[in-house]
Amino acid sequence: MARRGDRLTTLAAEIVAAGGTAPIIIPCDLALPGAADQIVAALDAAGVEVEYLVNNAGYGLFGRAAELDRDDQLGIVDVNIRALTDLSLRFAESVTRHRGGILNVASIAGFLPGPGMAVYYASKAFVLSFSEALHNELGPRGVRVTALCPGPVPTEFQIRAGFKPGLDSTILNVLPAAVARQGYEGLMANKRLVLPGLGIKMVPFLLRFFPRGFVLGAVGRLQRKR
Image (tube, rainbow, N blue to C red; front, side):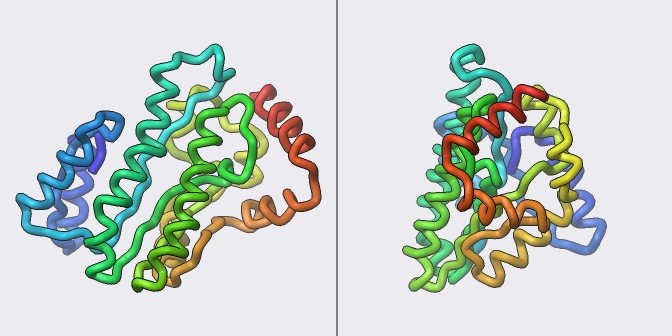
């Protein structure tokens, strides 16, 4: 499921060529209010139920919140928060019935205040908090819920956000395949959080030793250098 049907078709062909089962392709834009209804309808038509849900869609925008386009920033809320919450709640019953799991892609940004990407950082703080709560609520029902919190990952995210990777990306960089593998393994192990890479694992630990105001200023200075 993604906005670009051509990429989905290519990926599906690669899966089949490797001996896998042909996946169901659902091109849709999660920023639109009816996206979840479209997904449910497609799955119902195919006669399948969700056992594992991975909420990976998301984007951010670089710049001062008061100066960026308001609709574009509300789109971040729609995709990163509303759609993720909608899908998690819609499929909770099915996932519970199959004793499956939910993997929500948050970010190390969810632990931090984010001047320069205020709405994105705030959206990932929601994903982190929401996922941890679901981990506690659904765990007794046999459901795994994991928040995957990567740092900088070399993808199209930076281009869409409007900035070039800096020194932090060089130091904390983890390749997409490694992030995906660690997220999968963490979900299967029913981990509440997965922090890919040693550098990223250190961030929440180090934050305990610094006042919130100091962290706010440090993130702001880092973002202004981009």
